[in-house]
Amino acid sequence: MTFAGIDLLIAVGCIIMVLGFLGCCGAIKESQCMLLMFFIGLLLILILQIVTGILAAVNKSQIKTAFSLVISTNVDLLQSSTEEGKLYQENFQKFEREFQCCGLLNGPEDWGKNFNVPINNYKVCECAAEDRSTDLCTYYRDRYIYKAYCGDKLIKIIQDNMILIMGLTFGVAVIEVPVFAIKIFSTLQGRE
Image (cartoon, one colour):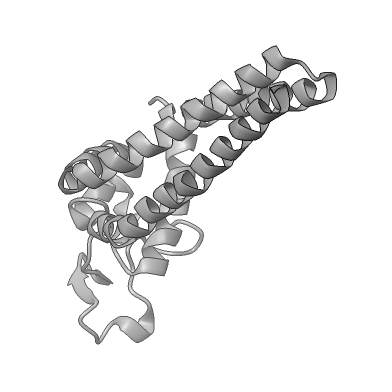
């Protein structure tokens, strides 16, 4: 299994570190070259933010399909017996209890042979005692489990917050553009 998300975060962290270095050293040394590279880097980040926001707005309907694909790759971890799989299962079971759901795409079948293996003294997908008489639970393999699939709940959470995510992206861009413009204007005024 690859950790593309972790690799991406490391790359972003390195880029931010280099930009911070260019900005600080450029300001202290009054180096126009470093400050220009710092400005170009920030401008590229701004452009990426705008493009990401536009793509998210345009492709909003495809988010569920893409997210389902990502979720399906994690089903294997629920059935795994490796240390990585066990850690994922432990954290996922906490998610199941908090959001009252079971499995990712196919409910309890996603757990495979691990369905009957207790994790931290809890059985997989098991309903809390107070929820068993409600519409949240169903009887499956000699115990009550949650009916809802966690994949559906995750997709709903993302869809419900998509407007907030897009709003924040555009909001940050709207703030950054005038700041860049003012900085460029003041720099040009200082040269005259």
